[in-house]
Image 1: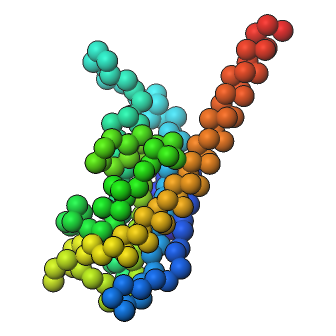
Image 2 (image 1 turned 135 degrees about the vertical axis):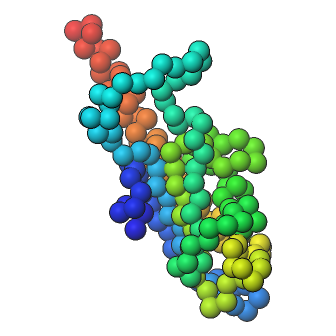
Image 3 (image 1 turned 90 degrees about the vertical axis):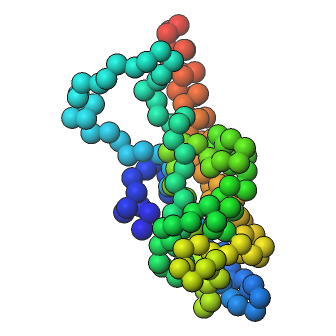
Length: 177
């Protein structure tokens, strides 16, 4: 689903084994899409606006990751900061996986984080069903799923960086040859 809906360079998904909170079973699924789709040549040929001093065309720095939350296949659109999924995404140390993250904020970069909770009784914060309640067991499972996605993303980023440095190294040798 991430591959069809979100354009990117890297995709991964994790399904955690079933867990229990207050006697109710639940399953956490997490997915991650990283990067941007290749730009169309027509868009690159369009006239570009001039940049201010200190501004760059690279937009990765200012863009924060998006968190898409679901509960029993129903999207949770409101009260994002009150939801256990959002709190778990903030708690995850994304710097360990090669992603920039300010303290108390989402990771920076072209990234979409997807979290789904399937349960017979989803603990919502209110009757409006806008956010998942913050239970320790639920937040722990979400964080473990996000960490697994982060490890896979870190491997992808390290491989890509290693390939770039190898390419630069080869180009240096070609200059001297």
